[in-house]
Length: 311
Image 1: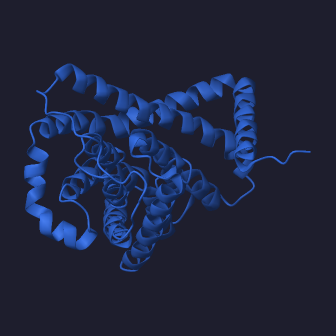
Image 2: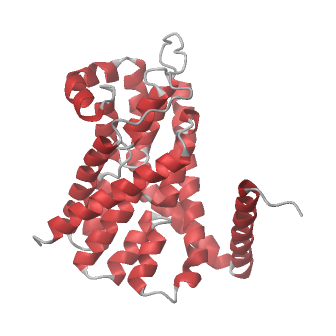
Image 3: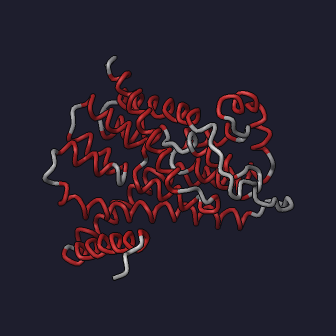
């Protein structure tokens, strides 16, 4: 009998998960209709406001060559710290201002325009794939935890963790296809093209968030036998918005801050899929993306433990 390859085995496992989710949806259609709407609402209220306009206006700046001029100011410190192009300064700033997945989208656009190499892109993603203050301080801290200070602690841990994570991956080198894409001739800014690309990117993110709201709801019964804090944390590893809300409701404040710091920096499978979809042309190894998000999560968690001690 022929042995199953690893890829075939993985496909069978995924297929079983999908069949299970479809079965749950058939049994409770109204519940999963509402769950999908909750996912769309989370996208519309937490992601769309920061993502839509920022991606569009970034395209305008890029077409005018202004990103390079801005980034040139930080060329020396960025190269010394992260061993990365000066353009990293812009992607990092974009990411910490607007949040997931703006940093990934800007990095992918720079690669597609031939301004950075594949290795540069992968280095940049180690510290330029972050959540933003609107979500962390506003939605999570003030909204879910009812404590703005908690949001500031989580955000500080998150940003410092990203900075240290960039130092950790400054020496990586991807030999295969490690070169910028062939740069096309500069063209005048095309409004229609920019609008279409922005819309497709934003809709892709919203679709992934809604799908993962359904996924986490499907697996909630399987996690119900666990302590509420553990169940909430596991849910956060799948989708961070729902996970942070459950953590805020199920854990004491100090523990909640630490757990939220981990899952926000890890990003959850949902955010990783957003990043992977938006950066598909970079062909970043999924193992490297997972490792970068895991080390970012651990570093942020350790920093939050230190900061929580001063609460």
